[in-house]
Length: 204
Image (cartoon, rainbow, N blue to C red; front, side):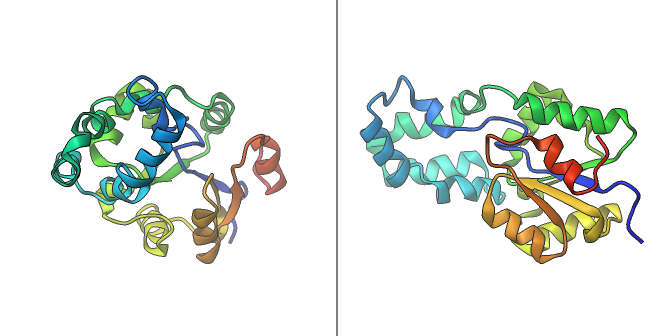
């Protein structure tokens, strides 16, 4: 039986926290075209995703420095200055999360995040500790949109996919959530998250 109020499951990066890896390099690589090349060929999305899958930052950096020693300073900066890539929260989304908590609702998260940076963000952004359950990709060695990571959340916390509304900025991850039966909100700004959630039956 469906719950009286759907359970909201949040993504974190670019839903609750602003994340842009390019911000790390505003001083180190100020030329836009050179930075584009660097992000596409050195510190690539695929390389970063392996930290989200559970590889340590120490190992990831060492592998890349060995492959591209001429870029060592810039590669190490991705790890050492990582928090520059997360300049602030997305205030409206955090307000929705806090409102749900005030109402006594349980809220959850599924996030592609490295083990080390997640631990640091829990300290820097204490609201991340307010979830009733979080599935972090590096802890599970699973990445969205693998159906298995959504199933971890459902099984661990006794949730029904049909009772959940999943909010994510990635279309692939939205498709993955729909595939296991969740309703979804594709978080593409500008967006009125409250209105989107109310449209799916969430009381706010």
